[in-house]
Length: 208
Image (cartoon, rainbow, N blue to C red; front, side):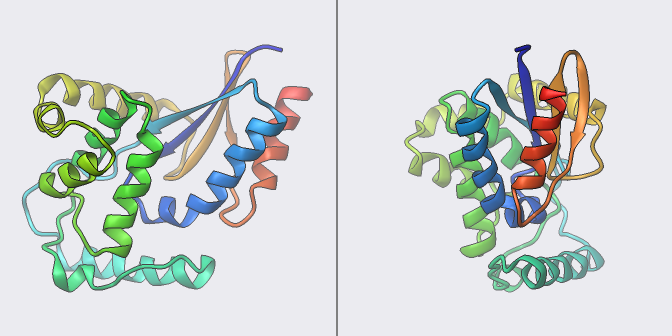
């Protein structure tokens, strides 16, 4: 068969990506078992650029409501202490860079999950480099290497190029799934609670 690539477009601090985590894990296992030739590739979409400014109150209110909505719809757990324990900033690019560094040692998925746990369960702020550094060290990534990389121009250029690629894909937000097959890009159905619709859609496109 012609090689196919499934792009998973995400942001490490996207709350809907956290809500999708269990189903996404299940979909990857099903793909590996039924369509092992389909390559899975993570693509950073980037929700919010670098900023040291406090998150506007309206944005804080909106995100808190979103967390409650995701919990009600999917049962996903959130620790709302974040909003009182942390200095919220609308800045996800640092965590995106951390994901790229982890990708170098094939630990991107582990980094994403660790960032999500820190943010949504432990009320820590992954907009902060010290939080990301602690996460990296917990994954066995060399601290000095991580600190040097996270602020490098080269890494930032890599992130900007990836964001540009993500914006060229047929997506409408995060998370999104896009199948590249026979030089075409197909948006894939995504169900937050059921991996089967995505799996069947991918199978249909490849086998038709």
